[in-house]
Amino acid sequence: MKRWVGSLIILVLFILQTTLVDYIKIFNTKPDLTLIGVITAALFCDQKWALLLGLCAGALKDTFATQTLGINTVIFFLWSVLVIKARRRFSLDFNGARVLLIGIIVFLQAVVTRVIFLYLGIPVALGIFLRTAILGSAYTCLVSLAVFKILRIK
Image 1 (cartoon, one colour):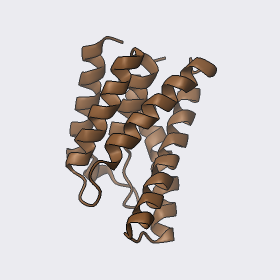
Image 2 (cartoon, one colour):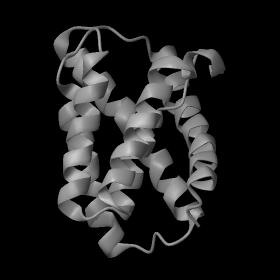
Image 3 (tube, rainbow, N blue to C red):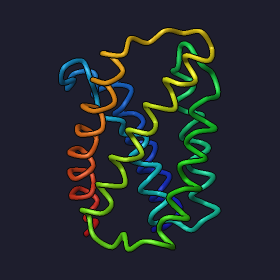
């Protein structure tokens, strides 16, 4: 994938995340389009560019964060590193494996964020966390299939 294509994908998904996704919530849960873009960039872009895109996407998401500044910047960079390492070890040549990877990462993103919130003294109810983690992962997986279809990734 060319550099400008990866950048454009993340920018478009981020804009959709901050504008239109609020209208397609299911049980007050929405897909994480920015994270889909980061994972897609880490799967298909060269290593250095994917890391830079992960860092920039996290910084973009942090610009709209209300409680924790900088967490997404660090975590998205780390997800990029993890996906780059995973694509070397595992066969991620078909969408089923990619969607499974996205689901796992979105669930882990919810867990890591909750742990950080608890450490910072920001309470998150267990029921809300479980709904967000489980439904958010499933919803993001479904949306990632649509994103792959639009991008013609097979």
